[in-house]
Image (cartoon, rainbow, N blue to C red; front, side):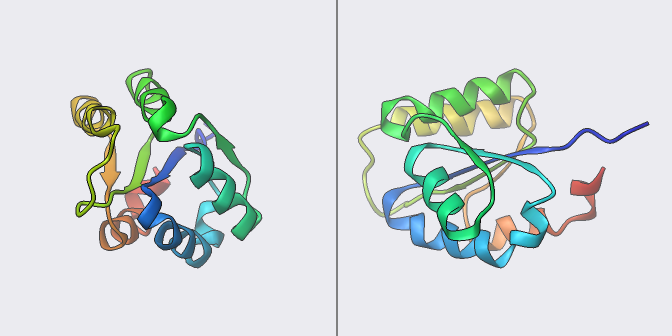
Length: 128
Protein backbone atom coordinates (compact mmCIF):
# COMPACT_ATOMS: atom_id res chain seq x y z
CA UNK A 1 0.00 0.00 0.00
CA UNK A 2 1.38 3.38 -1.01
CA UNK A 3 1.88 5.96 1.71
CA UNK A 4 -0.10 9.19 1.36
CA UNK A 5 2.12 12.27 1.02
CA UNK A 6 1.69 14.31 4.19
CA UNK A 7 0.79 17.99 3.91
CA UNK A 8 2.54 20.65 5.98
CA UNK A 9 1.20 24.18 6.44
CA UNK A 10 3.85 26.89 6.88
CA UNK A 11 2.80 30.15 8.54
CA UNK A 12 4.71 32.98 10.22
CA UNK A 13 3.94 36.37 11.65
CA UNK A 14 5.83 39.25 10.02
CA UNK A 15 8.65 39.38 12.60
CA UNK A 16 9.09 35.60 12.34
CA UNK A 17 9.22 35.30 8.53
CA UNK A 18 13.06 35.41 8.38
CA UNK A 19 13.15 32.66 11.02
CA UNK A 20 10.78 30.31 9.16
CA UNK A 21 12.62 30.96 5.89
CA UNK A 22 15.94 29.98 7.49
CA UNK A 23 14.29 26.93 9.06
CA UNK A 24 12.87 25.88 5.68
CA UNK A 25 16.26 26.37 3.99
CA UNK A 26 17.94 24.25 6.67
CA UNK A 27 15.29 21.53 6.26
CA UNK A 28 14.83 21.74 2.49
CA UNK A 29 15.88 18.13 1.84
CA UNK A 30 13.25 16.88 4.29
CA UNK A 31 10.52 19.31 3.24
CA UNK A 32 10.82 18.36 -0.44
CA UNK A 33 9.20 15.01 0.49
CA UNK A 34 5.97 16.68 1.63
CA UNK A 35 3.16 18.65 0.09
CA UNK A 36 3.61 22.21 1.34
CA UNK A 37 1.18 25.08 1.69
CA UNK A 38 1.10 28.31 3.61
CA UNK A 39 -0.39 31.71 4.01
CA UNK A 40 0.23 34.50 1.47
CA UNK A 41 3.60 36.14 1.89
CA UNK A 42 5.10 33.32 3.95
CA UNK A 43 4.47 30.72 1.25
CA UNK A 44 5.83 33.01 -1.47
CA UNK A 45 8.99 33.91 0.42
CA UNK A 46 9.76 30.31 1.42
CA UNK A 47 9.26 29.18 -2.16
CA UNK A 48 11.55 31.93 -3.49
CA UNK A 49 14.25 31.22 -0.89
CA UNK A 50 14.25 27.43 -1.21
CA UNK A 51 12.90 26.57 -4.65
CA UNK A 52 10.30 24.37 -2.95
CA UNK A 53 6.77 24.43 -4.29
CA UNK A 54 4.58 25.96 -1.58
CA UNK A 55 0.92 26.45 -2.45
CA UNK A 56 -0.19 29.86 -1.17
CA UNK A 57 -3.51 30.70 0.42
CA UNK A 58 -4.62 34.18 1.46
CA UNK A 59 -2.55 36.31 3.81
CA UNK A 60 -3.26 35.51 7.47
CA UNK A 61 -5.10 38.76 8.24
CA UNK A 62 -7.18 38.35 5.06
CA UNK A 63 -8.43 34.86 5.93
CA UNK A 64 -5.43 32.60 5.27
CA UNK A 65 -5.34 31.32 8.86
CA UNK A 66 -9.01 30.40 8.52
CA UNK A 67 -8.39 28.64 5.20
CA UNK A 68 -5.64 26.53 6.80
CA UNK A 69 -7.94 25.85 9.77
CA UNK A 70 -10.64 24.58 7.42
CA UNK A 71 -8.11 22.21 5.82
CA UNK A 72 -7.13 20.95 9.27
CA UNK A 73 -10.81 20.27 10.05
CA UNK A 74 -11.18 18.40 6.73
CA UNK A 75 -8.20 16.16 7.55
CA UNK A 76 -6.07 17.68 4.78
CA UNK A 77 -3.19 18.99 6.96
CA UNK A 78 -0.84 16.71 8.89
CA UNK A 79 1.39 19.34 10.50
CA UNK A 80 1.16 23.08 11.06
CA UNK A 81 4.42 25.00 11.47
CA UNK A 82 3.32 28.42 12.69
CA UNK A 83 6.06 30.68 13.96
CA UNK A 84 4.06 33.07 16.12
CA UNK A 85 5.33 36.35 17.46
CA UNK A 86 4.27 36.27 21.13
CA UNK A 87 5.61 39.77 21.80
CA UNK A 88 3.55 41.70 19.27
CA UNK A 89 -0.22 42.12 19.15
CA UNK A 90 -1.77 40.78 15.95
CA UNK A 91 -4.87 42.42 14.46
CA UNK A 92 -6.15 38.96 13.44
CA UNK A 93 -5.45 37.35 16.84
CA UNK A 94 -8.92 35.68 16.97
CA UNK A 95 -8.10 33.88 13.70
CA UNK A 96 -4.74 32.73 15.09
CA UNK A 97 -6.38 31.42 18.26
CA UNK A 98 -9.04 29.65 16.19
CA UNK A 99 -6.35 27.91 14.12
CA UNK A 100 -4.50 26.79 17.24
CA UNK A 101 -7.77 25.57 18.77
CA UNK A 102 -8.85 23.63 15.65
CA UNK A 103 -5.42 21.95 15.42
CA UNK A 104 -5.86 20.80 19.01
CA UNK A 105 -9.45 19.63 18.41
CA UNK A 106 -8.34 17.49 15.44
CA UNK A 107 -5.10 16.31 17.10
CA UNK A 108 -2.85 17.86 14.45
CA UNK A 109 0.70 18.66 15.52
CA UNK A 110 1.43 22.37 15.59
CA UNK A 111 4.96 23.72 16.01
CA UNK A 112 5.16 27.36 17.05
CA UNK A 113 8.95 27.73 17.25
CA UNK A 114 12.17 26.37 15.75
CA UNK A 115 12.88 23.90 18.57
CA UNK A 116 9.48 22.22 18.25
CA UNK A 117 9.49 22.33 14.45
CA UNK A 118 12.90 20.61 14.43
CA UNK A 119 11.71 17.89 16.82
CA UNK A 120 8.59 17.19 14.78
CA UNK A 121 10.10 17.31 11.28
CA UNK A 122 12.92 14.94 12.31
CA UNK A 123 10.58 12.53 14.12
CA UNK A 124 10.24 9.05 12.66
CA UNK A 125 6.49 9.50 13.17
CA UNK A 126 6.49 11.87 10.19
CA UNK A 127 7.39 8.89 8.01
CA UNK A 128 4.24 6.93 8.90
